[in-house]
Image (cartoon, rainbow, N blue to C red):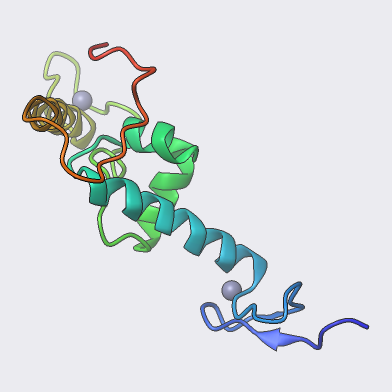
Length: 135
Ligand SMILES: [Zn+2]
Ligand SMILES: [Zn+2]
């Protein structure tokens, strides 16, 4: 006996729930879970770069960027809305959005390191100990 179709609260598409209490379609459930993971990671320590958030959440950088682009995130990891390629004119590097984001990313990293140096706060979860502190 299967469940009757329902309308997703998020995207209003019809879907067949796999659980009795499910109110979102598969894609939306997944997205809400991912968004929650990202918020959780940024809550414990803001100003993290998208690379760090990707490692902490286990999501791909593309996935995080997509969610940021969709406007699904309340807090956007630094660099998540960054273009993937430099489009600076030759000889004028540092002008395009990509280069400026790179710079913002470096500042964010510095801030992140500084907050780490200040000592961990209560309930702070650190899951990036397998990463070297500098690349
Ligand atoms: Zn949906
Ligand atoms: Zn550039």
